[in-house]
Length: 233
Image 1 (spheres, rainbow, N blue to C red):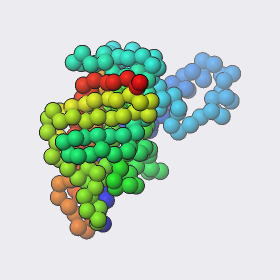
Image 2 (image 1 turned 135 degrees about the vertical axis):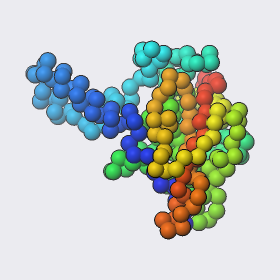
Image 3 (image 1 turned 30 degrees about the vertical axis):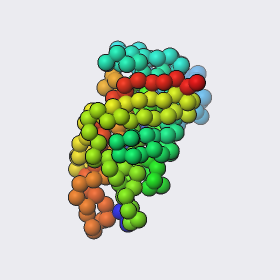
């Protein structure tokens, strides 16, 4: 049986790093308002809600209010309202499947899907269609045969990717590049960090198979960019 191992430790700017930044900010605020110390300690969290559910930043780092939109490069308007992806469609490789949600393991690595037929969205990051980099991971195969992202490596620039969100909105993307990286050199910054646009990144395993650990030695990454959205009816 083959499996997809987590391609990266806590993503840059992810909950671990954000928690530290929020903690530092909290200390400063507490020093300025010592009367809130007890409440601040009681409300502490390793992954602050405010860090994971904050409104996405638009151009120049200005926050985008919930329900608003934000222009991104190319004249496309990104979504302001955060909504979880529920379905993924990639016609070029005949993928049309529900999407699950992924978080972090106790060791701060990103979870991988438990269902080989369904990909998972990293829910502690950006939602598809928002400003930032949304990430969906899926398996390449199992002992039973090909899994949901078996043909991800075959995608080409311009291929369409569609994501239906829980609120009914459809976010459309186009593939810009497909690349393979050794797992020990996984480009976490490139995959998880916002570059001021609205991107969807698809990740699976690939490259040479290691029969000893029964896992692939590389990751295949498909980068896409937002081409448009259709509001829920």
